[in-house]
Image 1 (cartoon, rainbow, N blue to C red):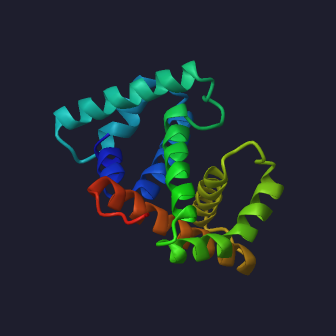
Image 2 (spheres, helix red, strand yellow):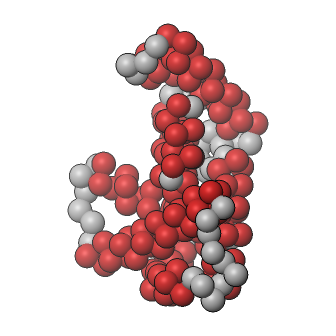
Length: 181
């Protein structure tokens, strides 16, 4: 909760990727709150109060995952909801005459997004969810120290640039400094 809250306030893209990773972490612990508290949260160098808060929050996430049928795969509705809100902003940015740089980044990333969507059979997912799924998949490959092809590196660079611009716009919108119209 501490990390997630900080990321949600500072970089929405990092927050979403962190939450995707957290979903997988909860799955690795079979969405068992006791195991999470004993084997995962206990390793944090935090106060007992912070550890208790984190364990409680993870327990609540486990319940949500169970209720939503996400204990094997998929993303929590709250995470998809955040992506949906980002999609609304994304569409506004694409329509804005003041956001030509964002529009250019989008069109540079679009062929890679379409290709990823076709390969991953993610037709039903929001376009931005495909972007985050791509970034998360490559993050996992890097953690596994697996080779990443030059083409994939190019795709990730283009999509990363788009998502970074979107995250910056999100923060600006929250601060009231985003110029769309």
